[in-house]
Amino acid sequence: MNMIKVSATSRTAAVAGAIAGIVREHHRAEIQAIGAGAVNQAVKALILATGYLRLDGIHVSCVPEFADVTIEDKVRTAIKLVVEPVNSPSVSEAATLKPAAVEEGG
Image 1 (cartoon, rainbow, N blue to C red):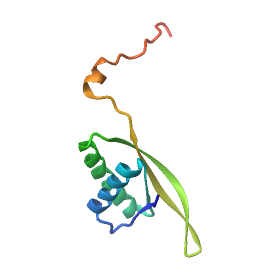
Image 2: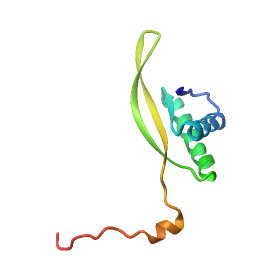
Image 3: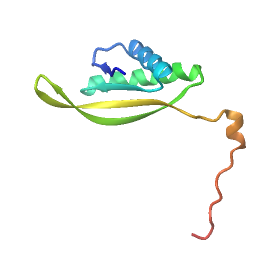
Image 4: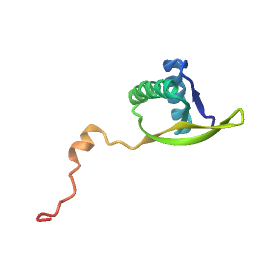
């Protein structure tokens, strides 16, 4: 699977569409951004993609990670966002779930 690389000038709607498409097809997307502007665009795109996927009944989680990337013989630290679907109960199922018992007196 290819990494989605985001820059400060990336169009958020285009990146969001790419994220949603990859999650639908491969059940996992990885987004990479270097620098504050790029991370800003990546997060905004992730928010849009989450909305697109939710319309299809797909709920996702995102785990941010640091990644070392070599660019022109220099090692840079990138932010990597790993996006994967999660199993989410429907509203009716969630209403029937009961919390685990909590011991008293602790």
